[in-house]
Length: 205
Image (tube, rainbow, N blue to C red; front, side):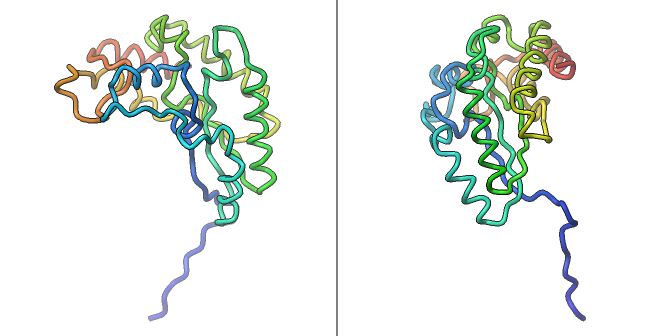
């Protein structure tokens, strides 16, 4: 019996993914950085400079292309682009634009995630996603990013795993001595009502 050879259909996107806080390094203005500095990560580890993707993304994208990939999913860090409420960092936007341009140069179709688990401190200080105002804040951020980077990106993801984000952050919390390593996200709460409130805001964002 001959073996059947299966092929991906034309236009199938085959690639890899990164999340800003996990790879960029130097993201110190969001809730995950504060969570790390509070000793809430196993072994008191911090992301620190990570793999310094902020300065070295081009090398990884060139490698991805050489491996035969034709797409890359990345996220943008909200706290870099809007470090303070209503204040935009043009240099950060330019850097993301350069990364997207590099993808096109290496025949990688960009896919951009707007929120991948991290929220600016200025918003978390106001209650984060528990605050109904988070919907308007996120809409404004999404509009800014789409207008700034839309020339280089056709594929967008608004929120990465919103249910996971809400459940681990607002339902999975427990006293520190009872936590399993990496069992919870910031803000580390355990409140079902707040969890549903966060989910409602996320789904309306």
